Length: 93
View 1 (cartoon, rainbow, N blue to C red):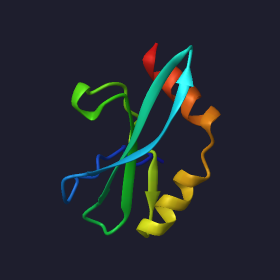
View 2 (view 1 turned 30 degrees about the horizontal axis):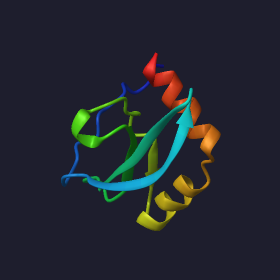
View 3 (view 1 turned 30 degrees about the vertical axis):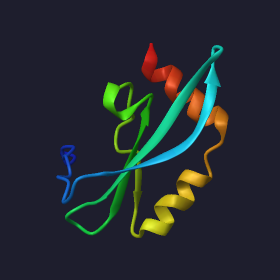
View 4 (view 1 turned 45 degrees about the horizontal axis):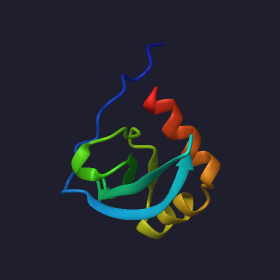
């Protein structure tokens, strides 16, 4: 039985950028931002942006997905500094 191919969920609106606390990685302060939007299917999605949004530094895929905006934020709040640092390091290499 063939699996379903991965599909890209189109964004229904421009993402809203939220500032998150910065962290230290290898003696450098790294700014973190969360881009959130509501998808066409009604779910809330988000991705992490590292550095300044204007510089378009490393970013995760759309790793946050929740039925409501408050549930999305709950999953973001559950992340600790070492999670952000590890994600950044994996993307910056």
